[in-house]
Image 1 (cartoon, rainbow, N blue to C red):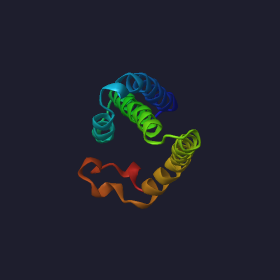
Image 2 (cartoon, helix red, strand yellow):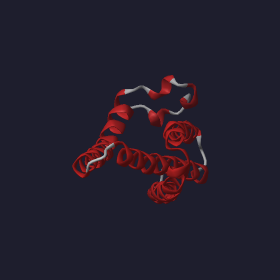
Image 3 (cartoon, rainbow, N blue to C red):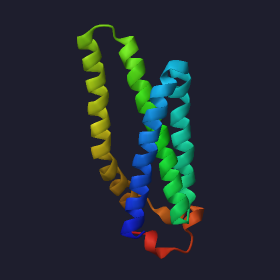
Image 4 (tube, one colour):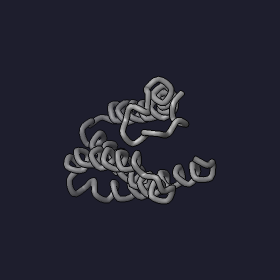
Length: 136
């Protein structure tokens, strides 16, 4: 994948995430538990669809949907944490632990992707038949 397409996908993810954060903040009042339960499903479906996209624009659009679902989930989770913990110190600790785990996931994600791409034989799957560039 060319480098500008990678940046376009990352930018679509961030735009989608910012839209998801805005919508998540607005919808947090309506039904947090349903949103928290359904947004990971949206992210999972969009991630599976992104895995099958051959067109860079379609891939970029699915990355935006992934970011949107992630933004809704994060904002609703923070709102739920703030309502669950009543004292200021427990709220601060809960939100800090959420942010620390999110930072750890952002740091670990690329390393996990390298391990998965390097050690799983991708040509086992039907979508990679005949493509010798995917084997390591």
